[in-house]
Amino acid sequence: MILLFDIGNTHTHVGLADGRRVRRHFNLLTRDWFAGGAAVEKLRRRVGPRPITGVALCSVVPRATPVARQAVRRLWRRDALAVTPRRLPGIGIDYPRPTTVGPDRLANAVAVRHHYGAPAIVIDFGTAVTFDVVDARGNYVGGVIAPGLAAMTDYLHEKTALLPRVRLREVSRAIGRSTAEAMRVGAVLGYRGLVRELLAALRGELGTRSVRVVATGGYARLMAAGLPGIQAVDPLLTLEGIRLVWEANRGK
Image (cartoon, rainbow, N blue to C red; front, side, top):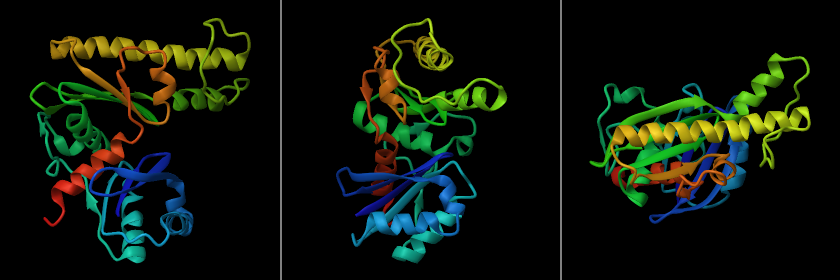
């Protein structure tokens, strides 16, 4: 099996894949990498006795990366292949400073180009909401970064005396009848408005409305339910992109 890591600010998404697709996946809390071996023990337990023949990762938490690499060497005696701009199968890069692009965004671009074609836009609803664009030539050309849904509601809770921490879910009306409901309306309907506006602008710059739009990330299904402009929800898109990078670069 191939072990895949997508190390994000809040969660580390872990996948187990074969040569065709991601077969199993689970999450670790990224903070557990710094909790005296908590992540290593959870990883060992969740992977179990399965033989690991390769490891690949992308990380947007630089201080977690060497901890994860050390864990892999300790548990399976393997080095992890990192997603970088020089290891992207099937896409080019038309971007001024490719090394400044988050590797998770590059993995998304690889997977969307491979499975959905081009031009395409990936919307990743994670700690941040990111839009990544692959143009008609199959080149990654950039995108958009906005605060995530949970980041917005958590910020309101932390910076105000009376606003609660809320769990995001679908809303049935625009007029909130409680404080928590009003916050959910602002997050869910407000972010759908943000997505619609940004998609319109991105399609305009690409010069076509025939763009495949794919959502991934923790809030992808919630947000896509009210956005017909999103054609597909693919929760494993980033892990699949990492898998494709490993397949294209193994043995090199």
